[in-house]
Image 1 (cartoon, rainbow, N blue to C red):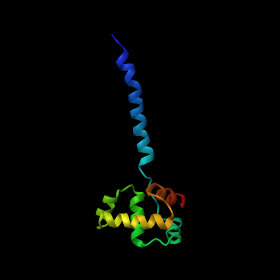
Image 2 (image 1 turned 120 degrees about the vertical axis):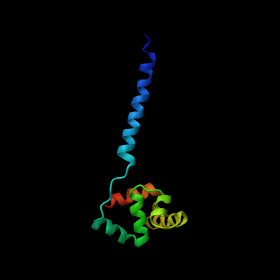
Image 3 (image 1 turned 180 degrees about the vertical axis):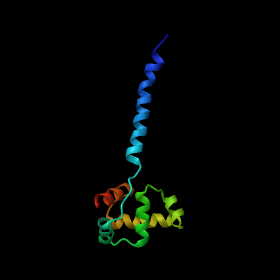
Length: 105
């Protein structure tokens, strides 16, 4: 009996488990509580009500098309709002926006 295939597949199985655990712990966004600090963040950057809705959707991990569907707009409109948010908050993208929002809590 040859033990080669069993031992050679163990690293792949361990890597697969690592990837699953990583995505479960780090990619799924934690819920954002709407509190006074978050409201102060929105006020500080003069965020409109629609931009606020979009930020909350982004924090929940939704894509631009998901946001457009939920807020009854087009993907281009969502992209325009996100661009305005990024410019106003002085960040370069979605992940930097998430970091800035989470650091305000």
